[in-house]
Length: 194
Image (cartoon, rainbow, N blue to C red; front, top):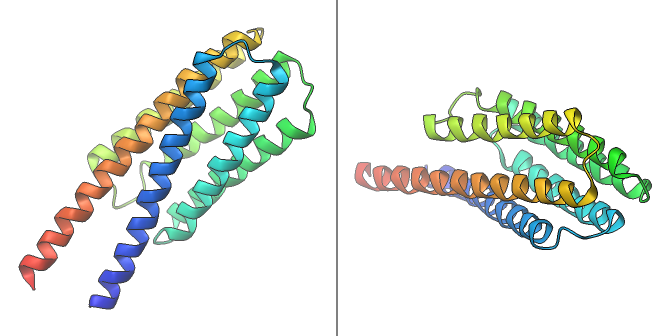
C-alpha cells in the first residue's frame, strides 16, 4: 500500500511541477511579448518557437506521468502539435506576419480543442474541468480572432499572443494549485484512515 502511495505521490509531484513550470514560462513569455511589442517578426518567431518547444516538453512530461488512457493520448497530442508549430516557425524564419498569425492560429485552435475534450475525461473535479474548458475556449476564440483578422501587424500579434499566454499561464498555475489541494486532502484522509 505504501509503495502505491509513494508512486502516486511521485506522479502527482511531477505533474504539479510540470504545471508550475509551464505556467511560469507562459506568463514570462506573455509578459515579454506585452512589455516589448515592437520586437521584429523574426524575434517573435524564435520566441514563439521556444515557447512551443517548452510546451511540447511539458506536455510530454505530463503524458508520461499520467495514469494512462485519454490523458496520455491528449497530452501526447498537445505535445506533438506544439512541437510541429515550433518546427514550422523555425524552418520558415522569415514569414510574413500573416503566415505567423496563421501558424499561431492553428496551434491555438488544436490546443483549445484538445484541452476542451480533455475536460471530459473521468476523474476530473468540477473546478479542474471548468479551467480546462475555459482555457480551451479561450484558445479557440483566440484562434478564431486570428483567422478572422490575419492582417494584424507583428506588434498587435505580439500583444494579443502575450495576453493569451499570460491567461494560459495563470490557468495552469490555478490547475496546479487545485491539484495540490486535492493531493493534500487525500494525504490527510489516508493518514486518518491508517
